[in-house]
Length: 207
Ligand SMILES: O=C(O)c1ccccc1NCC(=O)[C@H](O)[C@H](O)COP(=O)(O)O
Image (tube, rainbow, N blue to C red):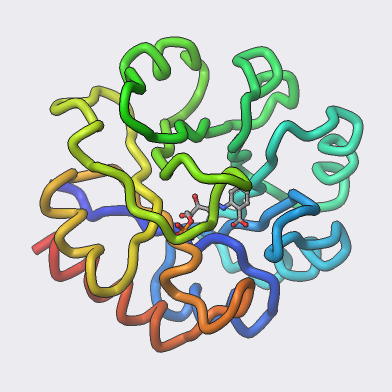
């Protein structure tokens, strides 16, 4: 079994980017969604992305964003992967010509197979709790909503913490995990010790 990939999302400070990289994160996420407390300005994100060494992926998170605005972000920030976290359809996700993942907002009644089929071009499906404000709320959803043997790369998120990520990895066996609130001391402020503990929890579960 391959190792579970790890993304640390909602970074706003250079020291947090460096802490995520030092701890062994595979990807870091920048939130381009002005209502979020983790929103980063374009020049701020460009400076943060410039700190990344090779083979650590810079992910840009968008929520129902205006096309011209996204294009402006892409002109200024070297993002290797886009994460669409709103109600974006397939064509909206595909129009930038960059690899992307699509977030499914999980709540009772969702059919993840059907959702996945409606986003055939996504490199993977991220599952997060259905919450007001779209995400980053630190809420866990019922992992039983994920069909067994889900056939595409699955990014598990929503309320993961250093304490529960091991159980999450053992039960769901996702391609990757994604965390924001669970490694924070305050919204948008990461805690290096929590990042290290989170990654250790994943690696222990990987076996
Ligand atoms: O982080 C935000 O503020 C945010 C705003 C709007 C949409 C999504 C947002 N975050 C999503 C994520 O950072 C990830 O999916 C994350 O792993 C889930 O967040 P959390 O439950 O806080 O770990």
